[in-house]
Length: 291
Length: 289
Image 1: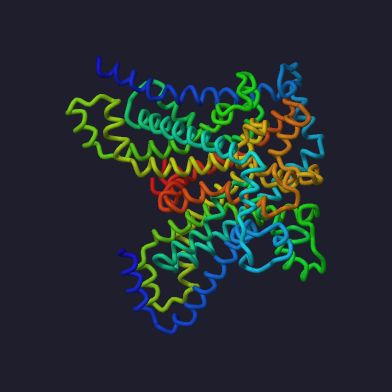
Image 2: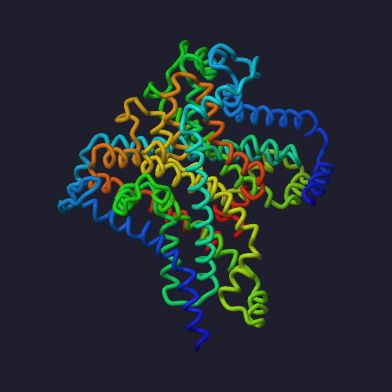
């Protein structure tokens, strides 16, 4: 019995720091977010209970609708195209061997480890309307240089392309791990049966890589719903009301307009969006036997 | 490795005509694609080595007269050294604390029986599902309440949430063969010794991998440090370099030199520990648990 008690004491010691941190930085702020969302509180300070009027205010706010639309637009522009590009790159890289493979993989992966601000600085330079080398591609096609970050139809696709460039390393690695796990003798058998490359891809690679594809899609979906950094940085000084995304709306309401309650309500909406997607992802992970 | 052997066997068994020229073309295409993918980084590095005048008139692949004046200007005319220090302090503390706390929690949930264990596990899974950006408002209120705005502790605290690391550790500790544990218990080891003599040393690889990826994540984080450290003296590198754009004028060489310096630690961490980074990413996505 003494043993049982010492085990419980040990467990308390081991989980105590976790409980302090997660209680303070996760459970408490989550509860507070819901509570704040039904008050008219400023960012710092108390507010009165106002029921659901923050939520009705959100629904009526055209900027919030723009933020939701832009977020969804951004998800559409990045998730499926990005995953497709990652699969293509992984297929190309997986053909290579040894040092050549590591080197090429490193070139494709490096953007992923850069801070977002560096990504911003690099691409802001590449797209600079006067001296950016990308204008060398844009000008011949459009007939004139384009200020990508001040031209509304170009903004979201521009940020999407950069985001794919930046975050794709993650999916590439997952796809490569998946491709390595496909038994080589399957291809051998298929080639003995006279299968073409395309047949091998559609009949062997694609079905066997499908679980990884689903995994990449869900991870990307959750990640891109939380888009803020890139949109904020590229949109600085521009018409942010038109390029607004959900996290940015929370940020502006709380930190610029000093409307903590309204910001919290917007946060709850984002929370619901992401939580639904995450439950979906969790179920997928469970199906893969990972708990 | 064995894959090389099986692969060459596969190649021999296939008809030769399908390879040769098509194969070379595909490899060439891969190389070109990789070069294009890397070009933005390359161009940033090259530009950072040009003089102010050259950045706007020279479009060659190599700088005609390379100079590090942009770097020197960045170090001497901005708070870059201070930002570097801030980033280093916060990232190292976050890495050490988050990994240690995650390992301890993973160990307790995996190996010890105690009341509330399931509740704890569900809290972890729940926190994994919650979008941290949704909590920024309340994080800010909490940190302001305890007067930690513009402090290292204020930057660090909300970034200690790394539920994925706990999940990864639990998976590894679950997978450790029972015999190790039993042998150690027979030798009279208590739960604490079991943790730091058996479970932790047997999973050094995981710890290294998770530490590197946590460090990279902490160094690169933007939104929270951007909100909590508004005093120039308290900024991290990732936030700081976005503020020099105006201060430096249109001198892109200087701005890009700052960007290169900001990415140096994480780029090095990746290049030195490439395999560990790959492993950490696979682990955090739930592959090979």
